[in-house]
Structures are given as structure tokens and as C-alpha cells.
Amino acid sequence: MATAQFAPSPTQPRLLPSQQLSNTTRARSLRLLSRPPRPARVRCSVAPEQVEAPVANPQQEKAPKNRASECYGVFCLTYDLEAEEKTRSWKKLINIVVSGAAGMISNHLLFKLASGEVFGQDQPLALKLLGSERSIQALEGVAMELEDSLYPLLREVSIGIDPYEVFQDAEWALLIGAKPRGPGMERAGLLDINGQIYAEQGKALNAVASRNVKVIVVGNPCNTNALICLKNAPNIPPKNFHALTRLDENRAKCQLALKAGVFYDKVSNVTIWGNHSTTQVPDFLNAKINGLPVKDVIKDTKWLEHEFTEKVQKRGGALIQKWGRSSAASTSVSIVDAIRSLVTPTPEGDWFSSGVYTNGNPYGIAEDIVFSMPCRSKGDGDYELVKDVIFDDFLWERIKKTEAELLAEKRCVAHLTGEGIAFCDLPEDTMLPGEM
Image (cartoon, rainbow, N blue to C red; front, side):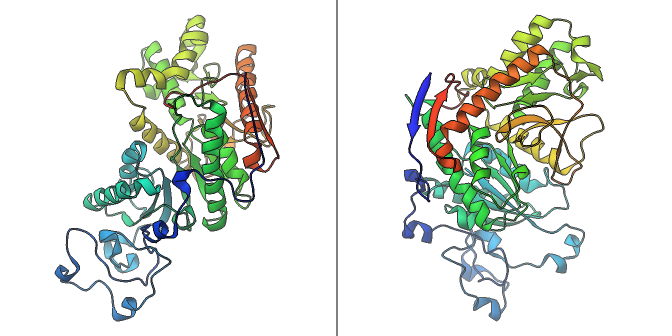
């Protein structure tokens, strides 16, 4: 049993070295001014004196510089969506924050967002990219690639290292950045280090984001990081916070499809219960293949209870052994799937998995944790929990095990959720694949 104890944090949580920002560093943080008027600047392959057409009127030239930041490249150009004939049918621009924006997952995700693949071909967007002091040059490289990709829907890009600036007016926050687990580090230490990051980001969201911002936490341990984040954002509905378990659902669908000899689209009603760890519970009892219960199609109960469950739980580790790195591309796809499930109506009779706040859940799962459960959406960004599910002893026993792990993680981060002194009594060290 791993045990550790932490003293309560002061009013402002301790920051990792990568989060301790000097005034000089903040001054060189780049951020797009998202509302005109703004200065006319171009920072791309064309020097300012080579720009032939004016990009702003004299009144705009006199506009004061916002904070200590500036826009990037072609995204500095002033435009008016309503004045452009081709954009008149577009929706109102939305602000999307991505943390860990210089990482491999983001490298796949950002281009899916900018292309219109996620929110639709009539949805212009602003990307607000958060990195660290160490990754600021890489963020500039990301912005350059977005610039060169000529996405018409991508109207604004900002990059920076201060969440209180980058998260301004965010309507979606995709929180990917997290510290990896170092050699000799126990899970308790990882919970504390990454928990501090998500406590600070929760406070920033609470201070400057939209009151209805939707938050998807990807950085591990994502369930407990999401709990920390929502506890530090009391002015944002807890229901708006999600921990990403969609990749686990996708992996479960894949394994069921392979075993049954069908394609993915024949598999539905798959739930991942609990924690995004090796205690997660891929639910075959409620899942369906071609509309039939999985157990009516796959008669091999031993395979379902053991091999299937373990394959899903350990799929990330198996991929690392083959690939030599963690699953960045499929993770980005699952983030896209998770967003789409919230912004498009759930097909009749089906559902999707997401790690959500448990208060008021109909299953008898402990309250005040973030637990993956089956959800449905009307396509308005909100969701409701599915009530018509069944349990047997096998399923419930495993749900209680993953619940116990999340309750132990919650005790381990009490100093970051405002609940007093933390005490880590994790039942076992359930290392997530890719944490190292």
C-alpha cells in the first residue's frame, strides 16, 4: 500500500518550476487580440514593409496594446466576418483553449479542429494555445503550421504560457498538458504534481472563461485532475467538466467487433465505467452488436470477463511496446469523438462514455468524484445520464473496485480541492500506460 501525507496548500497552490513565470517571460508570451480594434502587425514570411494592402485604419493604429501580448502572423489581420459575403451563413465565432498545445496529441488535434471536422463547416473558431516557458518556441512553430494550412474557418490564433490570459472568454477548454511520471515516482507524487497544474487552471477558468465553458480533461490521472479542476472553479457548473474515457470506449468497440467478426459501426451501447486506469470497467453486459446483447452474439463468457477486459485496460501499454510511444493520434480522435457526442444528438437508443461528476447519479455510485458513466446528449453541449442499464454481480464488483480507487485518489489530493490535509492510501499502484 502506497502512503503519503501532504500539508494543506496555501491560498495559491505551489507551482511546478515550469509554471513559475517571471515578468519577462510573461512579456514575451504571445496572445492574439481577439477583439478589434487592434494594431496592424504581420509576423509571417512577409515583412511589414512588403505588405501592399492596408490592414487597418488610422484609428486602429492608435489602439493600445492589450496587456503584454500580441497576435501571431496572418492572424493579426483585421477582418469583419459579417462584411464578407462567403461568411454570412457562418455561426458566431467560438473560443477554444488547448493546453499542452505543443505536444503530440495537440499536433493531431489542432488541425482537426481548424479544418471544421469537429464543429462543422459553418463554425469559425479562435484557437487559444497554452504551453510552458520551455515550449514557447514550439508553440510558435505550431502557429506557423496552422498559418500555412490556410484554414478559412480558423480566424484567430493566440499562444501563451499564462492561463489567466489564454483562457479569456474560453467556451471550450481541452486540457491536455500534464507532467509525465518520472523514474521512481509513485502515483501519489504524480497526483500531487499534476493536481497543482489543474488546480491553477481551474482557478484561471473560474476567473476569465465563459460561465458555460465545457472542459474536457485529458492529462492523466484525468478523472482526479478533472475533480481538482472543477473544485477550483466554483462559478462553473460541475456538470461542465469531463474526463476523457472515450479512447477506452473506442478500444472496447474495436475488440468486440474483432471477436464478433463485424465492423465497428455494428457495435453500440458500450460503456466504460470508473477511472481511466487499469481498474476501468469495459461493460459488455449492456453493449450490443447489431442491436443484440453482446452475450447473445459472443458466447465465450470467459473471453468477455477476462481477455476482453484486460485487453481494453492494457491496450495503451501494448501499443507503447509496439510503437515506442503513447497513442497520440488515437487520443486526438477520441477527443474529437467526445466533443461531437456533446454537440450532436445521440442516436436513438445509444449512448457514449464520459468521466463526469457523480452527484445525483442514479446508479448508487459514490458522490463527489469524477466517474466514467453512460451519457446521452441532445446536441446542445449538455448531457444526461442513461438510466436504462442493468448490472450483474460481475459488473458491480468491478465498478466498486474502480470506485474505491477514485475515492482513494480523492483523499490523496484533498489539499488541492479545499478539503483539508491529504492522506494517500492508494490500494495499489495502478500505473497508467504512458505515464512514464
